[in-house]
Image 1 (cartoon, rainbow, N blue to C red):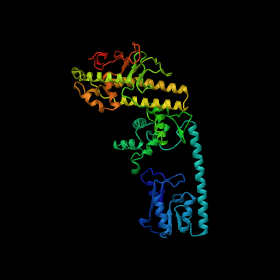
Image 2: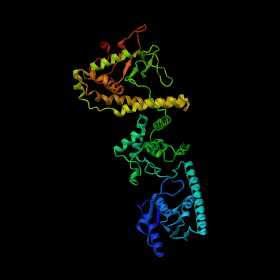
Image 3: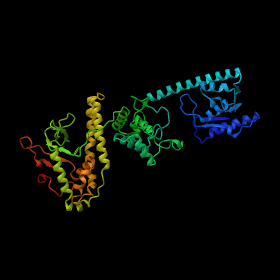
Length: 478
């Protein structure tokens, strides 16, 4: 006796009904079926498009081929097999197929075999016709921007309605991908935190995240408000996009995550530019724009205000990098060693700005990806400028948030003479950056008033201490 259902939605009720009808048929035939000869494939499809294994059917076929079965009772013929190829595997066994509502088929006779093959061909043709009609209907709905079938993926309650809690997880996953975490690492983190993928209540074997599952999740354009088919984005705006806009992942974050995965797959991981501990901290005192590290021909470095077409940089300010870093390091040590600073800081209720720091890292990575795409000719110049300006608008609030929130990063060193100086060599560039931002926010470099090469004027360095206990000029430090 064999029973199968493709999609069990009622805890086995479908196969139970099939078995009841099969037992009735066996009773009318005067047969008794041993419990070990009841084969059940619950929630398993037999379609040509399905890659699921049918373990019970495989066991039944093996028993029939071994001569242990004289016949099989099924509810309907398509419960036993859907493809003519499967029938051909059964024919050599010569078993008799009893259907609860149809004429039996005796595969030991030529007539029975002929009828079975004809019915299999008719059934296969009907399945193909259904597939064509379903695809046509899906294409029509897709062209109209409507959901076009399928189970709602993770992040969505239905094909039209996003799940805010799950979409928050999707958002974090894409941020982690852009931040450099592998899908395997993310899967381990989600599993450790008890966050489960969709469908784990239904199948215990799918109760954990896997790298391949997360790869598919990140690549799905649905999370950014796009409809996709065969990996291609649709030109039609989905009807569900606007009503879920507040929960969708930003398009630039989604594209950056997908590009990161593509680069890993092709063996070309997208790496950010090498970041120094003053990256994003040094500003031009004339135009207020960020200054960048540049290496001269002789190998020495400078911090420069670079003239760029997408920003109002003046391009006229530069300063020796090594001397600047020495001056700022000594100023920082003197600042945190100030005895009164700890008492002032304790009056503030500040917490570490990990979110703001992570946002700045993501902005830097997104900028790298945009510039890389533009260099490769993947995006036009107008789009490049527009997306860089959007990142610029996101960068300033993140800087302000980091300054406001990261003052707590100074707490281990405030008023403790020599502690930061001793710990400084072991701090990473990112850790140093957090500390310098917590102390001074940003560092402004005024244009030089001295003539001649090799002249270093420390009075050009202007600080804005978080707790105003020292003078903004660090000339005395030099």
